Image (cartoon, rainbow, N blue to C red):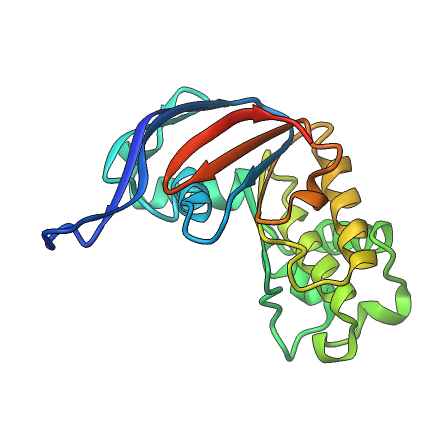
Length: 223
C-alpha cells in the first residue's frame, strides 16, 4: 500500500545546522495489519505519520500510496484522500465540547444522513457506549469513553488506513487495553499505524518499526 523511497524531512532549512526529522530511508507497508512505530520523543515517528497522511510534505524522497505519488497530488486531492481513505486518532480526543457523542462522530462523516447516524451509533455501541452516552457531551464522558468516541469518529467513513498517534498515552491501563483491542480488530481488514513510545501496548502487533534520530533502527522487530 505504502512505498517510501529515500524520505527526508529537514526543519530549519535556512539555518547552518539543519534538523533532520527524517534522515532518508526506504520502507514498504502492507495494505492491512497493525503496525507499531516506536521510538523516543524526537525520533521522527510522528513526522513520518504526518508525511504518510499528507499532513506534511517531505523535503525529499517519494511516498507512493497504491501507486500514486502523494507529494504530486493537488490540495483538493489530498483533502479527498484524507476524508475518504484515511482516519486519525490522536493522544487528545479533540472532541467538540458542545456536541453529543453521536454528533462528534458524525462531524467526520462524508455524508451526514440517516445511514451515517446509524453507523455512528453502531460504532459507539460496539465500543461499549450505550444509549445513555449517545447524547452526552464530552465533559460528561469518562476519559476512556471520550477516546473511544474519537476512534468511532475516525472510523465513520471506514478508512483504509487508520493513523493513531499515541492513542493510549492519556489513558489508564484498562482503557488503553480496550482501545488497542479495538484497533487490532480493525486491523484485520485495514492498515492501522500506531505511533507510540510505549512498547507494552504493541503486544500482538503484526509488525514493529523502531526509529531513532530520524532513522530506522529496526524495520521488522517483534516483542
